Image (cartoon, rainbow, N blue to C red; front, top):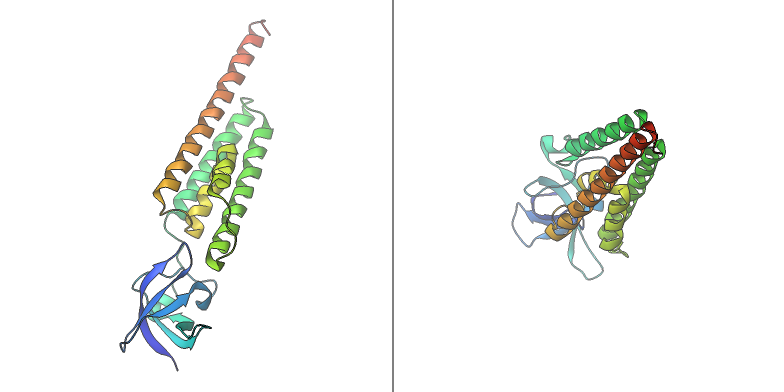
Length: 204
């Protein structure tokens, strides 16, 4: 039998939370897998309907969870995704412009693209592992990928999957990696420009 309640708490990093029944009683555990696929992520205070079952430890668990009313039809992207995509587009547009102008080799653009795809995939795998309680990717590995040039893809993945966005120490390390990588890119641009100037002056 369907019951009504409100999402009292939600840990989006791990994909679970608790529902407070409208009729009263103990809170009911709910996992992200119990929500419909293809809809927005759950949020605290979402009104829901659900059925109740019990897990192997005989604890209450919600299943077949649906958002009530208009909330069920809403399909909004997580906060920050649009801004992340704009940053991604702007950064690669800058790289493409530098490559077309001959400031950097086109291989640099391809390298950033490949590293961003790999970093995005690693975040997706780690998010899935966090929700399943499986083996996680080390944070140092994620930061290494960001430092190596995958930070644009990592930034989009963080916002899209809502992964690692609330951990301040991780975010601080992430932005340090971004700044370090951009500094290295700036050095490459300056070094290339200096080399071209020496050639044009006949010193190359």
